[in-house]
Image 1 (cartoon, rainbow, N blue to C red):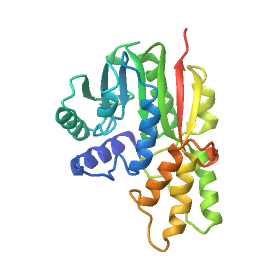
Image 2: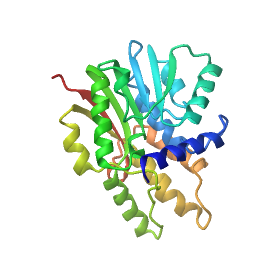
Image 3: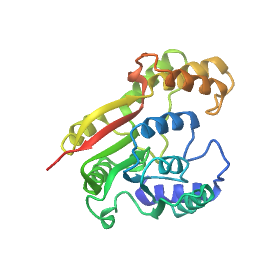
Image 4: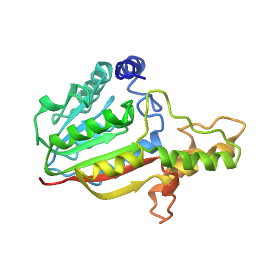
Length: 262
């Protein structure tokens, strides 16, 4: 899909979305979303000015806002920004603001403005590596020296590994939706080191294996549901700190990146 087609997809999604929905176009797997959110909250501090790109309807933004000095949420879809503003007003938050803007057009926000940038499955909505690379460069410019970029995004190589496991037990492959392009380590890992120091890489492998392999086996021939009790149990296991490494299946990874000093 082209950039404008992706914008229209999210515009239409926002027009159909209700603030009370649990499984939504912006959060199809609420348990995975909460695992991502928990990892991000662990690294937010009360003195930070934060930028969240691809904030959607602000399900996560309002939680981050309670832990930081200020937060600005950006999204390309005006319909989602309207929902985000309504959610923040309902929560009575005064330190959160929103702007309808693409991650590819952040320069007017000013350079070296934010202590932290959050991307929660935003970059995968850009259709080419060139677009994703440009977004990374703009994120770098908006961060203050030594600022943090907390990025939880999809990766192609781990998805292929998960699909090999699904194929081995007779499941069909997990397909990437038409408006997403997962990052590739062969492109991303080399380039990102020219801008940031990689402080940590966190994975959701145990949860994704349980929810994408064990769960569909357990319920077939019925279809698995993202909001099921099995996924809830998988999220509890993933949060327990059992020391079980299944990173190879984690097609969603969180990179903790520190802006390099010039």
